[in-house]
Image (cartoon, rainbow, N blue to C red; front, side):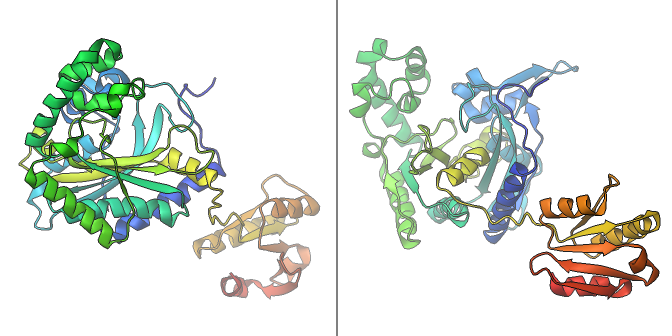
Length: 420
């Protein structure tokens, strides 16, 4: 039996890196005052049809949807924002006196697509959502958090790309311009883009198949159709980013794959050599109509999501070694039945005091136990034989210096606490 295609097992050693990265992301979230939210892995299918958009590839092609025993249509979540906004509405978080509501999540998402490097059918996303503020400053804060997440882990080859999708009026004007532009060459576009041109022409710009078509290079820019309010909003976002010394590139063709975005859109990419053809690490933007779409009051929001798999790929591409301490604090070696029983008590007490410790459970000889301590890179080896047991003592060997002391058992805990 093997794991299903597009999934993976994270074995010890690899999972240590995941724990470290996730721990750093949680620390950073707390620094920015984003609080964790945990939503169900599956939701009613309607949530994603309404929240993500029924014209998107995610809803039309990529969702894992099934009918449960109650004849309800259920979908494994393909992204995090719709679930977070659903919870925001259901639990009336918009009524909290502390606004905006700032949330983060880490968890598995599911999309049926062709597996490739850094793109799995089950993948893990970290994301943040800030709900309740229409201030351009919160857009800049969210972008700052995303950039800081990568930089704090040691990445340097980063490129931030931003754009404005405008408000509803701006998008409608741009929509018609796109239709007028692409209609003459409609038959030359892929079948998906022919459908998108009627349903959501903005997404034609995001097509991977037709991106080299000459019509793409001359497509009308949304920036030329921004009304005054949208233009001023985008200028303020840029002013805040400038004030925070965050470098960025304005890309007039940047769009987001989900239907709920408007105003600010952004992506962070890796420029590292050997990272791969798909350079995007994360993306996000503003979604001012999503809360209403899901039954809540008019509430502005902005957020982003990043793939943990792609983050780890970028760290590997740049040769970043995570400072994970893989060494064991102590290894207890015991010889004889009475010593084995006493060693179990010692191990338990040391663990209760917060010291990381292990011992042999396979009846190995002393030499083999020392080898086991070496494999685990133990900082100290504690030896308990008949003589030590009779004197209520234990031998403590410093594996770095080679020095060895004999310590009274009742003093062992304090002795190790000082050394460690």
